[in-house]
Length: 203
Image (cartoon, rainbow, N blue to C red):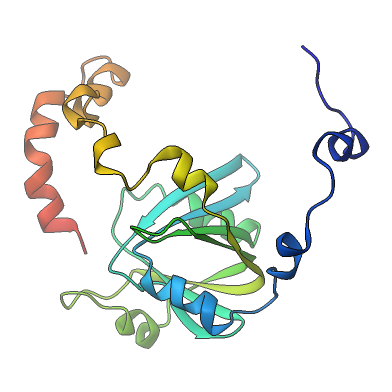
């Protein structure tokens, strides 16, 4: 397999970025970038730690990531599976990367920075949904923010309903758990109980 092993080889293949690829990158959130953050109900959170890398999906009500000021974002952490992989990584390595998606928009927004985990009661309460405060709040100091052009979204037809996969053709979470647990977990029961469990533990 022929591979690339140097930056020089890479640049010879791809060339140099154009002006539009560079001028969009800032170290603070402008109103135009804030508009995407405030409209987004979904972000991927990338972290790194001694065990390796992690990329976690984070979904909530649109605008759940708060633009506190031009250099600070705040993201509530809610109930989950208690693995806390992202949070463990942030404690040991503050570097984070975020990719915001807005349903219907081809444009995505990328943010790089450093994070800390706040358990300030007043702050957590300010993110309450249905009377339930955030368990903690990830406070992100912005270092880089820029938009990503729409090619990936258009190529993937992500928002095109005609391209959506029928979920019934995919293995269910229960089926996967039954296989990975060597049948110590009842997959059918897990899938059957999931809707009610989700309703009771969403927030």
